[in-house]
Amino acid sequence: MENAGMDWTAIQAVVWTLIKILALVVPLMLGVAYLTYAERKIIGWMQVRIGPNRVGFQGLLQPIADAVKLLMKEIIIPSGASRGLFILGPILAIAPALAAWAVIPFTDSLVLANINAGLLYVMAITSMGVYGVIIAGWASNSKYAFLGAMRSAAQIVSYEIAMGFALVGVLMAAQSLNLTDIVHGQAGGLHHWYIWPLFPLFIVYLIAGVAETNRAPFDVAEGESEIVAGFHVEYSGMAFAVFFLAEYANMILVAALTTLMFLGGWLSPVTFLPDGIVWWLLKTGFVLFLFLWFRATFPRYRYDQIMRLGWKVFIPITLVWIVVVGGMMQTPYGYLFH
Amino acid sequence: MTYTTAIFYFFAAILVFAGLRVITARNPVHAALYLVLAFFTAAGLWMLLEAEFLAITLVLVYVGAVMVLFLFVVMMLDINLEKLREGFWDYLPLAGFVAVLLVIEMALILGSRHFGLEVMGAPAPHAADYSNTKELGRVLYTEYVYAFELAAVILLVAIVAAIALTLRRRKDSKYIDPAEQVKVRRNDRLRIVKMQSTPKPGTGEGGA
Image (cartoon, rainbow over all chains, first blue to last red; front, side, top):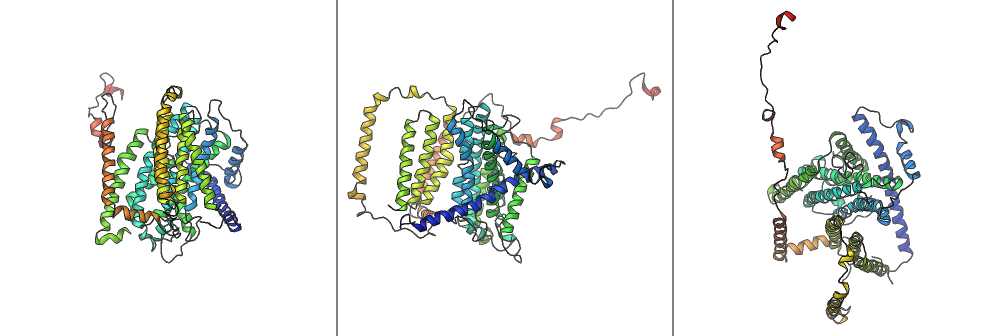
């Protein structure tokens, strides 16, 4: 804490932090833009199509063209909408998606805020993302949007519990809430990663992550064949694009967290190669590829199936595995779970 | 005024404003959202007290889960505030009396005689790597383990009671057991009948 008052060093610190935030957000937004491109290309190839290939070489400028198009479009606010909240919706969707990135480490030293309770912070911040969806759905004053918001609220709250329990397992293995320490706990090569002792939790976390980000096959909040586009049906132009940005930023966040907690973060899988951010990017990229692969493969879940999977399958699995991990730690084989 | 004090007053002002709006907002959804703001700002104040575990848990539990369900319900209900406000002036004297009593009680305990800086000095700030979460966990599971377990059991009883009170089996429910669906084999649904293929009389051998 700064006790000397608002002097020159404090202002310097604020400016320096702002520069660091920019250095984090700009690559993230570029990542989001090109993730949409990758999604369209990869799903295209999976369905034996070409995908975008008109704007720029191999369609590489397509996301830029889309962004410009959305920026130029008019934002229409429905006359029956609750004006203030209608605008607040997208803001509340994107703010947590970006704020959570503050504690994500990229290497040993490359992290915006290396705080003790990093994991708790991420959980608390991401749990607020649902407000964007609920408020947007309610403020639109449209039944489709409202149905989407209700579905999304129930789904996100349900899967958050399973997700939280999966993180409890990681916390037990790493004995720390600090994300950097969690990665350090997995040092020593591929077989030390937490994916092996915590495999059921890894699966639960990954699937709950897909559900939390409202991605297919859990995208009942959008459900374009039933409720048009769900919570963002009344949004146009940049207001819609902000929802889009938030969804993809959340996707990258879940992929990054999976990487950090189960796949050894920036650590190299074999000891003779150096650790580095390259590994972080490769692993995160692989998890993101899984997201796209899921979308191309699975049909949308029915609402009652989603609820059943979350409450009756995932929560019991995580509870049992937490007990297993805790019990095994008391035996001579406890080292396998650290 | 130090930086921390400035932040404190900033947060406190927002908290008081949000708290007032919770009871004055005409729209129940707006009121619930102001309550969310109040929780979040309170978490900020706790963070200033170096109680980061409590602050983050407040956001995680109350903002992230409880208020979402609250909003969920409030959005579904058709609440007529005019009707709710009907008895306002009748209840005002009683409410005012309760409020004054509360203020007197708090003043008695929190006055400078018991809570002033001379009696309870500000605790020394901890080092940056001090883990509030770990300390809290240690105390909770050693010194206060019985109280903690008791609280957990009471909560469990409350959950069981709430479910038992609301659980009802509907007669007209079209519930399908997923396990049954998965277990179904071809032979349960489909019967393949072996039949002799006999030519129709008249068209038989000669037609081929």
